[in-house]
Length: 120
Image 1 (spheres, rainbow, N blue to C red):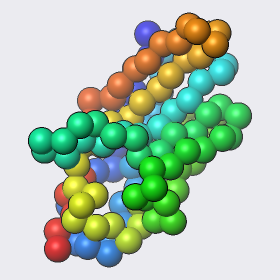
Image 2 (cartoon, rainbow, N blue to C red):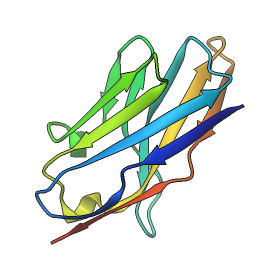
Image 3 (cartoon, helix red, strand yellow):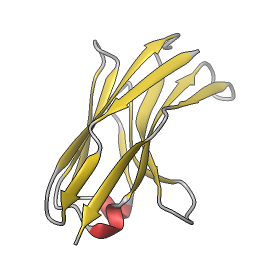
């Protein structure tokens, strides 16, 4: 099992910035990915950004150029720096961790979610 503890959500005005953090603990496999997904009211959960243990990143088109994902592998922590926030970024942001044991076998874990609200 992997436990994820998120922090950093809150209320910010449009154009502002927030930084989310997510610390993982427990059975962390060496080959893994950590990242962020978000879910707005009435919407499906969607990918925001992910980063593998090897440093490969993937961003949703809607956040490219505004959000930056980074991680500290020594601390098993992933960060999401969110700049130029827009009201449409308002959502619950969920931290995600995936252990990749083989190409076909993986384990997926979720944090409890942190609310990000951007006022216009």
